[in-house]
Length: 295
Image (cartoon, helix red, strand yellow):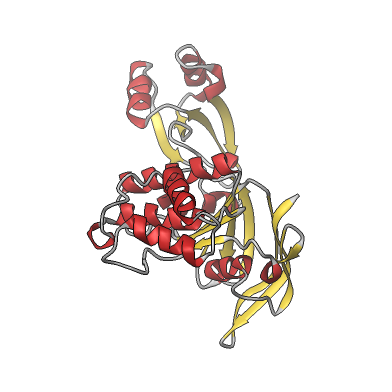
């Protein structure tokens, strides 16, 4: 069953078309990234959260209109808290009380445990960006949502903190069986690979790319053109696993190259030198979201 479905959705805001006839389906428990320029990303998140309605088409959660669903998605949009000079514990407990949870103290403690908030007695005003974001994650989990939406989850975070935050979010979503949707203009900033990416070009959905199609570290490749392709391919085959080598044709240029996968440029250069290969051209290739959409 799909957790989220947009069916022919068009959304106009202040006279501007921010979504134009968009259709996509996100399965339960999946991790999707919505990316693109303009206002399309925030428009999708707003429709899914139920805070906005489409002008045409339907935005559905588990088969029901998003704005009519009782257990609405948790939507993380900022790092702000109601009580900046109170502790994180007090803020999460206050939120649980406001949401009329049957056992607000235990509900808030559980949410902070799951989010990895071990600095709960620290004043919010004294927290760094990562701590504030983990605190907001705890707030989002108080209601035990089925869908978690995060707008620009790594905004303002250094690379290491971005990786840590997304690792926590991924672990939490798996543990709770959440459907996770992150909106960002820079998918590389997430420091992890999603199940699927929906890429927008202005108000239109440009395409959907599966995460398995994207390169990870060690999965990048190099295209090598030498003066004696057959001889050098045979020599490389004796030094590298056969699964990492292939001969491919660049259709645009009508030239054949040796594709070498999983071998760093320095290591490959040294190996080619040892084999006496005369290199005409060496290209570094990586399967990115843009390159896949351009195919």
